[in-house]
Image (cartoon, rainbow, N blue to C red; front, top):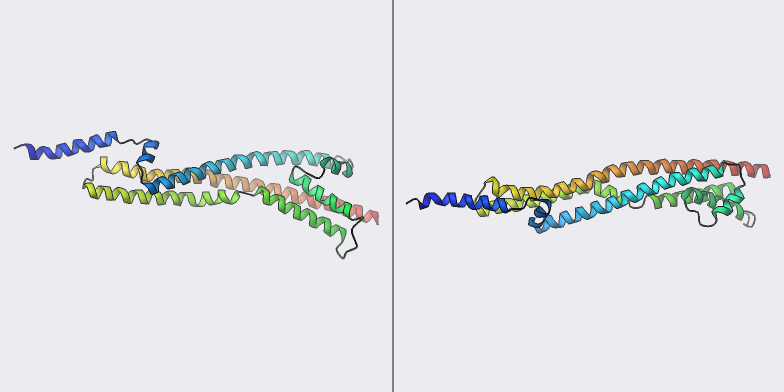
Length: 242
């Protein structure tokens, strides 16, 4: 006679046992997640790893660029011969500032053998420096678009995984006809895990993008200032030559 009353207790014990055995660790949440949620998590994790690789690469590169620029400007403004400096740099400058200097010097040296043109030598030199500056900055800004994309979309992709996971959890709840916390919690945790991964990928990408962009703008301004200063020096020497 006590059997019907004991059935709910047996069901509750079974649910509690299932909750205890359910692995709520990060790896356990991933393994028990839906296929779509797994794909979202893997994609966000890969994007996060690639973002950190870009961040470290850009950080080291920018630090080296400023250090190299300081050394080059010390040599440039030391009062030594520009011809000697150009020969030392050679045809393969190692940094953008040296590349701008080398481009101007090459155009200056070609002036003796180049045919007459309506474009003045000063204009050709300025154009060569500007083209080199733009090309070098394009190289430095490579992969910055990826950081911007991760920072702006990773959260929404993670949110998509969360919504998908919650939908599956509700379907499981409806199928089991049990709304106890032991049944609901694991599915909700799996779903929210996708949003957490999205935030882990997005936040560093946004912060790094802002910081690296600021540093690149500073470096671009420094290159532009150097090109104008060098152009002014060449202009004075051309006037003195006449």
